[in-house]
Structure formats: C-alpha cells, structure tokens
Length: 568
Image (cartoon, rainbow, N blue to C red; front, side, top):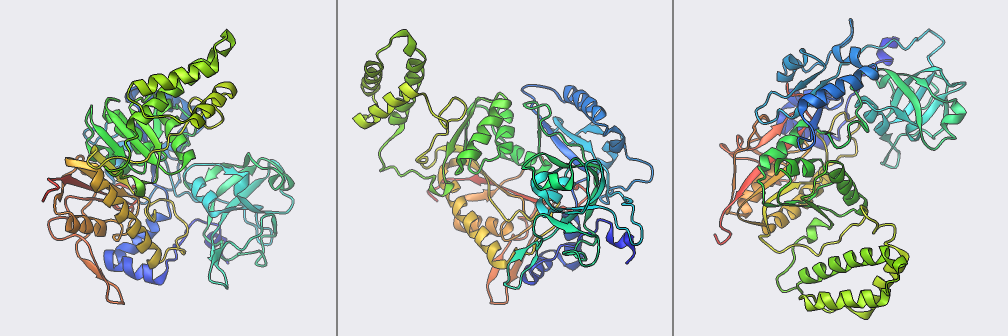
C-alpha cells in the first residue's frame, strides 16, 4: 500500500442506508456528499465572543495576539509555505482573515465577535520507511474529534500504543472508529493497552487508513500511558488542522462559541427589563449571550435537569459577572405549573429569607447567639410576612444546617434550586435550543449509530418541549427554536408542526440573517408515512446553516415565532 494513502486524513462518514436515502431526498445526492465530507473536518477558524460588559474587542484582540505569540501559534495562524488550506474557499470570512490572525466580524451588530484563523488540512510526513512503520498511538474517536478542534491528547483518550514508546518519542496519532459487532452493536474492538506493531495483524489496521490526525511527542512512556489516570499523553505539535486553543484563557472576558449560536441569541432580540426563559440552557453559552444583549437588566431564567450542568451555568455567569441570570434544576417537560396547585411563591421567599438568616446566624455562632431561638424567630417572621406554615421537621433541619454548615451542594456558589415550574404566559420571550441528534457538529467521524427511528425519537421529544414553550410564553411574545443538526425532521418538520398546531403562531423575520433558506417540500417514507417540511414562502423566514457552505460553520437551524392572541 502506498503510505500516502494510509498515513493521511481522509475520513468517510458511513451512514445507515435508510438515513442516507432520507438525506439524499432532502439535499440531493451530490450536495449531501459534500455535506458529509464537510462534517468530518473542523471549521477553518475559531469564533470568540467578547463579553462587552467587561472588555472590548480591541482589548481582547491585543491580549489574544500576545497569547498566540507566547504559544508559538503565530506562524500557524498566518499559514506556512506549502501548508494546506481549508477547502471552503470564497467565504466572506476568507478575505477578512487575510488581514491577520484575528479579525472582528464584519456583520452589523456582531462586531464583538472575533474570528481566529486556523489552517489545514496539512500534509504530514510521518517518517514511514518500508518495513519500519512509525511509532503510533491510537486514540478514541471522541478524543480525535477534540484534537481536530485544537485539544491535546489526554491520557483517558489513549486506546493503544506501539511497543517501546518512551517519553520524548515522536508518534503518529490515529483514530479508532466504532465498527459493527456481530451482535449488531457498535464498538472500537480494541482493548485498551493493546500493543501495536504497525503491521496488518494489528487490530483495525486497515480501518485506520486515512484516519491519521497528526504527529506529536509522547510525554510519558508506554507503561506510563496506561498507568496514569490523567494528564497530557501526547503533545500534538504537528497537526492536520491547526486551530489555537483558548482553554482557560481570559476567563470572563471571552467565550468560545459557534457563530450560529451567537446569531440565535440575536434572533431572540432580548430587551432590557424583560423576563426571558432559556429552556435547555447548559452549558450556558446562549444564556450568557442573551444576558449581555439585555445589558444584564431584567430576569433570565435558565433551566437544566442536571444538577452539575446547572452549576456550570452558575459558574459561567459568575465568571462573566452577570447578575440577571436565575438558574433552576428542572425537566422542561414538567415546566408548566398549574393554576390550581399550591402557590409556593411565598414559601420560596420564606425559604430564601430563612436561608439568608441561617447563613448570618451560622457566621455569628461564636458570638453567642441562641441558634434555636434565632431559627424559630426567623420562621415566625416569615409567617407574619405572608409566608406559609413551616413544619417542625423543617425547623429541625434548619437548625442542623445552622450548626453544621450549608453542606457540599449548598455552599455559596454551589447551591442549585429546584423548581416546580412556572405559570402559563409567564415569559416575554422563550429560547428552546433543543437537545437533538447533533448531526451538524464538526468534526464528526462516526454516524453509524444514527437510525430513522432514533431521529424520530428526537423529533417527538422536541415537539413535547415546544408544547411547553408555547404555554409559557405570553401573547405578543416570541419563541426561538434552534438545533445543531442537519436533520429536516427536527428542523423544518418542527416548524410545520408548530404552525399547523398553533394557529396563533407565525414565522417572524430574524436579524441578522446570514444563514440560508429552509427546505421546502416533504418526504414520503417506504411505509407510506409523509413528513411535511416548509411550504413555499416560508423558507426565507428560517435560517439553515449548511456545514458545506462558504460560511464554514457547523450545521445549524433557527426558527423564530411571533405569538398572537391565544384565544384564536
């Protein structure tokens, strides 16, 4: 085999045949082939959002240039002689990025967004000699996708390694992609710690053809790679795609975020003083973008059903010094609070008041306060001020917290509030960035597990969440729906469902509008089921970001709805 055929990066996405036929119907065979290729590669630039409440674009550019120079990435950003270039030429970003490694976005209203240039794909000489293949490290598919976006190879991502690798050795890094098992499942088929000989007898020797993502220096011996539990395993100093990493850089001043996600926050058009809901908020990128557009004035409620993810949102909001964000742990399918339920608003106020006094009392214990009396007085005051009855059991728990401290999850900055939901028509604007099949994320090296049934399940779940959003937004309000998938069943079909089900909803124009039109038409499956998409005239109201377009973004979809009178 010609080593140039093996030691390169030219992955091919292998789709489930039914899914492939579905997407060919939506996009056409040639266009879908181009989309599939684009999905396997990262964008040619990193998109950075500046926190304009704490800094300016010019100040951040100056700081990032210094960081890039210190990390030795400056030359890569400008490109090297003989290096590859990203195949998405003709992009409106392409001309801008010729002016330097970091430039401001030229789209009106998005001047606080910065583009940091990367390069690739690069041809890498792995030092192949007939009969003496290079030393190699195989990493998991998810690790490889992260490396293609600029990350290092960390110890947990290493799956297999050549024999006799020592600290300081140069190694070729390749990706292990899931393969079909005899039982019908998917697995990489490599036991962690497998010794590689670089021969055809190695596990998945042929499957790794065209899946070499770069070259690096081993930071520990082979034995160390499989004994350590954390740390960098391979320092990637020669990558197929070179994008600067801004991990833990300028925290609070910048946030690394895809361009369509930033556009989504603008499409919502949040205003100061409004009450806004972000239904699926983690990790908080869109939440903080909305808060900044609101000038941190108003109330932005951010939900997630995971305790840890809610804490991540809190941490990000704190880093960015944003105070208008209120977080709750809540399953959005249970977000509606019925009018006939007990009104816990005063109870929550009483609990918050009690919590404040507990903190104050616990900090004053050494000064001789009577904790039992303090707690009982706080409860009495809460009831007198309109709160509801607090049981003796709650008082005993409060006393224990006062004596023993707030506990691990209730410490300052780590407390997560549960919510029983919200009354209908409670919000001026609602963002539903729905959990989806994520078929627009880049780079993506494996899609074999995606089936027509799994896509349908995503669509059904999204409709249920959208039903909640419709109930929570007030008449005259706005709903923005977005996904990071190329699947029309989760995008255009959701819009069709929304417009056909809720006659008081109408599509609204978006600003800025830089994405392409939506898909018009329908799909009829072999079993006779028809999936309706957009109708003529509706396609220009939505924004579809094609990963193969000149914008070179992830695949993404945005729809904006105006809410009329619900009495209709």
